[in-house]
Length: 428
Ligand code: PMP
Image (tube, helix red, strand yellow):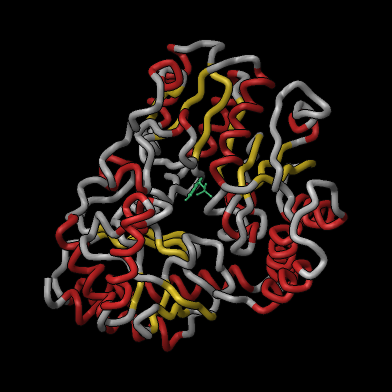
C-alpha cells in the first residue's frame, strides 16, 4: 500500500502544527514513518487520503465502540446542529444523558459533563482534594489520566512513548503531591499510605490499565485498594475513560462488583465528540460549584452536539444488551487466532486481554505493570506495526497502547487480520 499523499500532507502540517499533529502519539514517532491522513471512516474501516482502506483496531482511541459514522449518532448530531451549536445555557438534553448515565453506572447519583478525559480526571482530583481537605494523591506508574500537571508523573501512553514521563513545565511543587505506586502492588500502596498518614486525598487508578498496553488488575488488587481507601479516609477514583461503557454497561465497578468513590469518563460517553464526565454519590458531587466550594466550569461543557452524540451512543448501548458479550466473543476469537499463529512462528510474545481491550507484547514474561510492559521488544513491535499497515490493518503506533475492538468488525475482518499477523510474523 502506498501512503504518498499522507506523507505530503504531513510535510505541510509540520510547517504550521508542532510535529504536524494535535496529539503526540499520532506522529508515529515510536514506530517511524509518517502518519496516515484520514479522509473518512465507516463501520470498522477508515479510508485515507491515498484511497487505502484500513481495518481499524483503535477506533479513535476507544469511542467508536459501535463503528465509525454510527448512524444514530450521526443523525442526532445533524438534527441538533440545525437548532444551534452552543448556547452556554442549560438544555433538556443534558439532563437526559445524565439520567441515563446515572441509571447505567452503579454507585453514582450525579454526573457533570466536561470536554475531555483530561478535564474529567483533573476535576475529579480537585473535588477529592476539596472534599477530604487533603493535598496528596497516589497514581500508578504507567497509568495515564490525561495531560494535566499532577498526572504527568510516570504517565503511560504518549508520555512513555516520548520518554518524557516527567514533563518539563510541571513544577516541583505540583509533582511532590503526586505519589507514585506500582500497578498491581498493594503492599507498595499500603506503604505510601503509612508514610503519608492523613495526607492522601485520593488514589486514582485505571481499574483496567490501557495506557501501557492492556493490563488487567490482578485478583484482589482493586478490592485491596477499596479496603485501603475505606480504612484511611481516602477517596478511590476509577478513571474509566477507556473502560466506561466498554467493558460492561456499568464499567469496571459492575464488572468486578467494586465501588469507587468518583468515576471519570471519556471516549465512549461522547460517541466520538469531545466529551468527558465525572460522577459520584450526591454527597461528593454536591461539593462542586454552584452548590459547594470546589470550582469547576466550562464554556462548551454540555454542548448540545456533544450531548446528542453521547445520548445516542448510550441509548444504543443501553438497548442492545448483548453487545458486551458480542465484543467479548469477537476479541477472544482475535486473541486466540493471533496467539496460534504467533506460536506457530516461534515469536516470543504475551497477549493481554479483557473484554474488548487487547494488546500484544513482544516479551515472554507476564505483563502486569509498567516495568514489565517496558521490557517488550520495540524493534519487533515496529515490524509488526508496519507489516500490518501494509496489509491494510491499523493498530496503535506505539507498543504502550491497547487495541479497542469495535462491534462493527466481522469475523471475516478478524480472520483476515489473523492471516495478516501470520504473514507479518513470519518476517520477524
Ligand atoms: N484517562 C485515560 C484512562 C485515558 O486513556 C485518557 C486518554 N487516552 C485520558 C484519561 C485523557 O483523555 P483525553 O485524551 O480525552 O483528555
